[in-house]
Image (tube, rainbow, N blue to C red; front, side):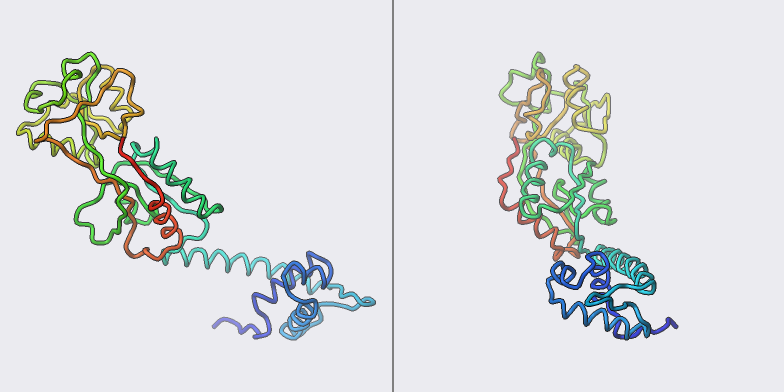
Length: 304
């Protein structure tokens, strides 16, 4: 059983003790804490009652701390620091972060959408620290469920009863080809005409890979994939280098290599991605997430 601490000793009184020792006088400590000098004096006297020893001596009209007061102050600093850390850890486990937020993002959202969202959040909570974690759709969803991130801007996950979402925008999938290719001048591309063409692709877990697979399923044939890559910017460079064609979302249009163009797919193969800010339903009352949601609603996100 833990030893009993006298009820006269409280966190607030320990804070007052530290303020008094740092400021050197009752009046300056009172000014820092926003209370009266009398309240400071009463708290210090109460600590003497609670510890059952003398902590101060009177020199003229001034209180002077003795060695016992300084020893109690050393313990008070450690106790208050430990309790602050404990409260922070408790709030994080309960889904309430205090001074930072970890946001997952698709690579393709870092050009426009995520900077705009982070700036909008900073306008609402200037002191919050933001950590951006990049990854594939499936990887970010797993990190969200594991608690490694607080929210994620990803392709809207299907059948995710544990996830709440705020739609950011919808984005069309396009056929990506070098500007000098025979497909570049077309008004649209029929994937049925591309049976023998080489393609490059993202790996499984990327939302754009899911659209790639879905579009070719509608075309009734599997693409001839000659290379798989792990990020969308490298994928665009492979198309630029003539390694193969691919399918890309319209939001990357502004960061395409100069010799890569996006051509609409024929109506039968058109796929739309729904990009949303997602977070766990269990954390829907987290003040940081509420601020992030409010920031989302003030922004007008566009695909291209």
